[in-house]
Image (tube, rainbow, N blue to C red; front, side, top):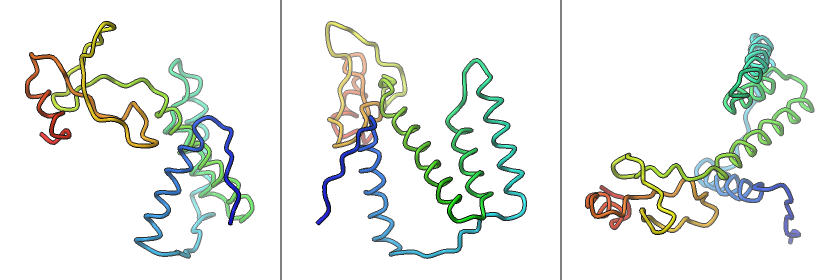
Length: 166
């Protein structure tokens, strides 16, 4: 029996549970797998350098660095590595960046776009303007579908009533 895992980084427990769920699904489908690393191949060092340069250039832009370039830089650094110890360290960095990106997504406000018609849902501080399902355990609020509640949107009201299948 193992001791419970205590994670202190905000959002990390939710990420670990999601990764564990996905790994269980992979194991059920494919079983335990063993493959060659395939890293350290010609061209990967250059791709890692290019990804690092693109990420650094993007960080200097007013919008700041983008997650896609940060992750790509870490992935190419891992692919460029032929030393097993350094490869493992790079893969841990890939996982950490993925965890940070997922946390960013999970903490974003809901976009308030109707899942049926794609139009914005108005926000009224005095009453409900939307309806939708209750989030599943460990499902971030920003990913739960919402639907117009107003009488002027009967199709959207019905779409939400049948679980979003329209």
